Length: 137
Image (cartoon, rainbow, N blue to C red; front, side, top):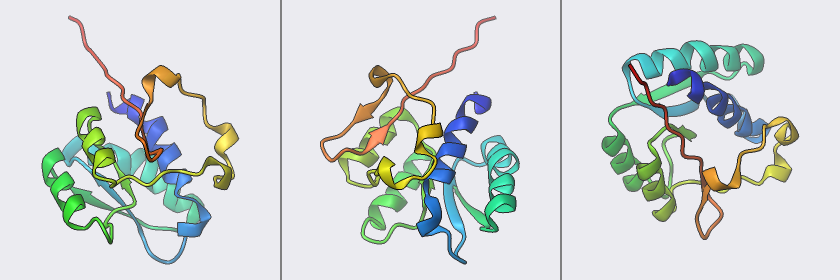
């Protein structure tokens, strides 16, 4: 399941773009444990090596992180959020996700296209891409 999230994580981190690439660290909101450890190893460390920008993590449960985002709505505490599809819709409906202007992302053409059926877009243009993983024994 984590391996499917990694390409999206790379895209999201790179999509933050040069405008955000200052001395300040990039803050990623994610669950703890293996999720955080894997994202740190597979995405954050290579990102820091390439850009020189440190990556910090806000870890916690899905609803706890949503509550923090709601409180900080006017002044977000994180730059990239990993969450579930149904809670992602709450972030969108609360206006907590920023719309990406793909024209301002230098490597946008290198991002693999996503099927439109798998993409949820709110009225303000914020997007959330749902995904699921199953395991059969």
